[in-house]
Image (cartoon, rainbow, N blue to C red; front, side, top):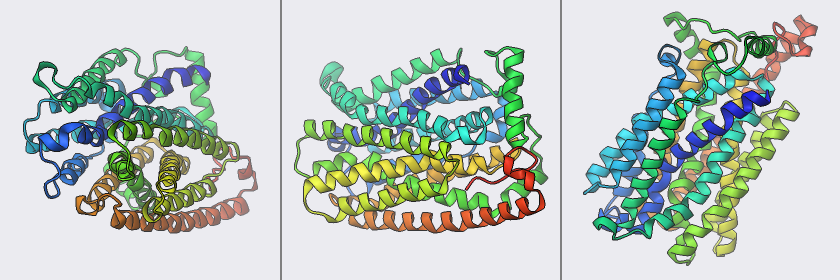
Length: 437
């Protein structure tokens, strides 16, 4: 288990951190000259450039086994790194918007593939801690990326380029470099891995088979695809995930603008971006550990959703800057924790590789819809408090709680039926499969 952890989590966490930084550094570049040079404050240009990234969010999990995880993930990383680098030379906001479309297209296949691969390696009640560890890496990197971006912006004037250009160019070049290096180390599915011995591979497959009975892949047919898509729980997971990503993306794109509205200068704004992410990383890991330890998902998801609601209310409605800033801590930690929590909640209640591939693809794609919603409800004309966006985000958290209650009640009833028919199911060993609540 430790060897698998060391091979999978640090590298995948680093690559996802690069994806998150390249996706959200638009907000940092905005306050370091991009807004002025490309006139993004005119009309809804900034919202358009932000949300258009999410338009091409199409799932790639269906082709993952055919193409190969290493080939697909490496291609995605190098391709979006090249686009990110090219954004540094965008002469107009229209060209920047086109680059964001390409960025979204190349990043779209990465995260669902990453989640799918991780969930095939571990037992159900080991998944959330692993997803949270990976996600924590990206959260920490996202927090300190503002400071790093500010350092890069000090290169303004070099080679006739402004500071925001250097942010895109250097961060894009770093992504390409890590993509090339990662090709030799990226993991594949357990039955295809090349870093474990035959005995170790058999142990991994046996553990997963005993836990849920789907260690080896099944073929995804058209009939299976339709059957999986007809399961209402898939759409419940997807909508809950969308609701969780809305405040997470909103904070990622607008945290600099919100903190700037509290009266601090650019340097202090970028420094103050880091602490909420450090707090969120610790919170995410704590809740993931508790969730795996007690083999419970819904209760901890509900607590983190309530944290998000309280945080959004503080940031939106309290006038004191200190309390507004504290609200960012709570909202960021709550929404960030819900993301790996919901991925674990959905993956824990799935049998078969084909359904796992379809569910992960649909759920993560709805995260893209959450990104579109976040960047459109937080409108330029509502700055700096963004009250309509705050209200809409709170409403989405209420929807999340309602769906969480309905879905968990249904799974609890299903477990009761299973236990009545097969008391041995309480051991948690397949075929007495019990849903994780």
